[in-house]
Length: 286
Image (cartoon, rainbow, N blue to C red):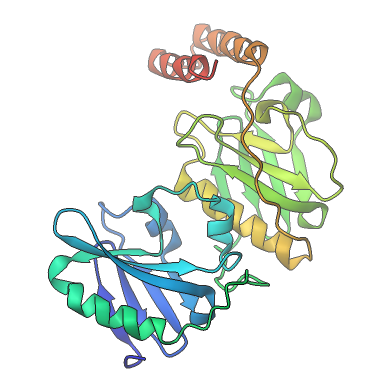
């Protein structure tokens, strides 16, 4: 391998090649994706890497990418393939003139890999640290490392959630986490109970879920949160749960949400713009 401490700098990040790992440090500039800024840095042991690719990029760039083993990183496991290309934390974009240098490092790194094609038996990349919190559309979610808490917002929570009351979920009672990106419809974070009890089909009716929307639950806040919870669940002895396909809303549920949104708008609690945007989102799901 290259000398310990060799650094390859690209756009938004720099990779430092060490004897047993790659330390990825993310920039904090205004153009850097917010997820990278939230992560700060990631240390990736060689045993977590399944492969390395170097491909042509856009507009005179090349892209160096580390492909991690399945189950090696709680962040990628929580994301379940939903991250956009520009937010891939293991993708380093460099000017094309650094292509030869990038190829050298790629070859050196490949020589250190001993992946057998099997999923990792444990997380090899550290999860984002707790405590963590973020605001969803209908609640404030917080996690102290042992317990997840949902505190409902009266301006967004459904009547079913208000009836159930604020929720607390010890990690010992969970078997997994389902994260749906806020950048698509039906964005939410759902906690999966260890006892296998069935949950309501729609997240806005499920007290074990918080829903995203209107700028709530952004990727750089909700995904590290989900990864931290998932890692704690795994550490507690439960196998990670693979997210299921996102269900479609029932038309009656959408009508109820629009009615509730209209009441908030008439009361002056939601602006004209927020009302129009959210109503359009809901109608698009029919």
